[in-house]
Length: 201
Image 1 (cartoon, rainbow, N blue to C red):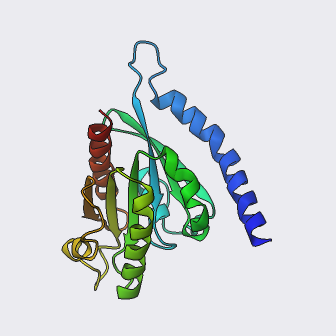
Image 2: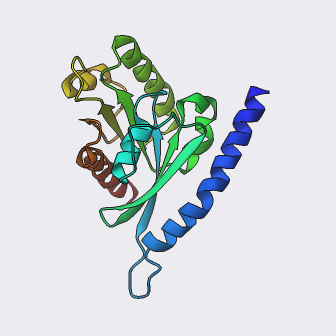
């Protein structure tokens, strides 16, 4: 029964976001006369429940983030970045068994981890990333270490050391992010966009 409910939640989430995604595509994709069509990339936003995925994306698009609930199913944000359009699909940690259903269309991965959650959570994030990356062969990956403004958080260098050996030559980077800092999230997506553009051309 729980799996049936999860499937229904995924279906409802897809219907709810489809219309908004279509409207944003018409706005962003270059369908305006005289404008060249923009390249579009599918980005997966992954991470454990509570890592800060929803907060980071809400900050990016100017939505309130201080009272967000963990995402059930998935959440889609579409926005222009560096003359491209990114369709960012945030997959909730609670539906991780369904993540692989979305791997085939992905051009890149934004993996979010909570740098202030403690050693056990960091190791769990490492294990999760180690399990999903082999299924996303060749796709670039940017890791966003959130809650960098909290005392006792892991530094960017510590997160890089934690994830050492996982990327296996793919284009990748680790960036830290404080809550509510849009430019830090945007920098991560700009870097990922550059990697995806270079990989596809």
